[in-house]
Image (cartoon, rainbow, N blue to C red):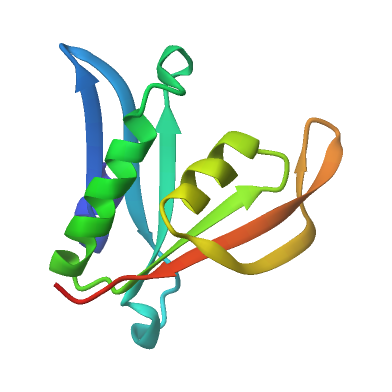
Length: 123
């Protein structure tokens, strides 16, 4: 949370009562000033809440609010085998912007990173 305050990017939390069931943050894409209007979306949904619409609501909220933070495009960097995240972002209108082959090393294997993006409409 402190890093979000420092870089002026938002972090939203989804709750069910007092339980935190997910969060979404907008991260800076690059330190270059010319890249400031772009943001990387990071999202996490608690395992018991996946498939319940929490991610969809958080992402919809981020797409509406991002222009207020002077952000005009969003990008998601998703492991190629994360079907749930790929489906979520594609259903919200994100399209393929690129692929980084073998860039991720996790669980003793190499994975591709898929880049999905969306240019936001001005309010």
